[in-house]
Image (tube, rainbow, N blue to C red; front, side):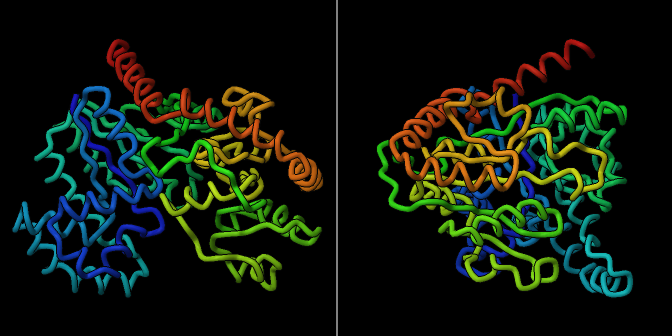
Length: 388
């Protein structure tokens, strides 16, 4: 089969990379795309490469990366290229008048449809947080046999009216989100996140020199995360913190005195490998009022990234973690006091910590890779075809 994989421009990483590097932005579309994907930021081309390894064809598109999409239009569809520029003043005026920053959506969708028409995929796989109009999805269905959505994100106010029902089915890494979508009348299936074995130079015999690290953002949707990390710092844990903290939400936070700039992709994974222990903290249901139980079920890519590179994982407890790792592979905590206690215990027992890290890494590299998930996805597609 031929796949078109649509990935999000998470935190505008791809857009900023092009805007801040004129030499990179001057390169042809395919060269730019390959350079950006090689950084393995967030989902990148991980699923696409896994499908290729399994004998399928797959191409990656980043619909919301304006500089990249404009480059594609310039090389492949001059009409859309000039239309993009001619409409730019009108879109800018609408954005100022209506405070509406998604006014690029219509022209973006036109470029996306032209790309889909050129690729002619059997399956279009769309990652979360890519806004596509319902009419665009219906047009894609005229070219592709199936359009699938992957969604493991909070359904915030701006996504309430997203056309979830227009997709053939939705896959998600959390059982609670599966239940949410089924209740809304959508076809939905469980498909966990994964680790890309190509993301960085995995040092299986590494000897980490540093103690504890946390990488992630602190926003109004991460109140519990902030509570735990602040508690650890206040109680003397020497923890390195990378990420972003909202000063409006957390004024005068103790974390602001320690936090380092955000890192991602290969850079993030290479940093993980320098530490004996990495903390991961899920959000709580009270932080996102979308009707989904975020506190009970694991669905983050981070747990596979940490274990995949061979660093020990300490994560807030979720019910389905036991289906992914055993108790002698990862460490869990149910409150900040237990988190503090377990950090002190395991840092005092480095051999035990190292043994757990190696077991978890073996599990991830054998059972939680993108090739594993691609095989599961193909089975879901076959099952859906059989039922329909």
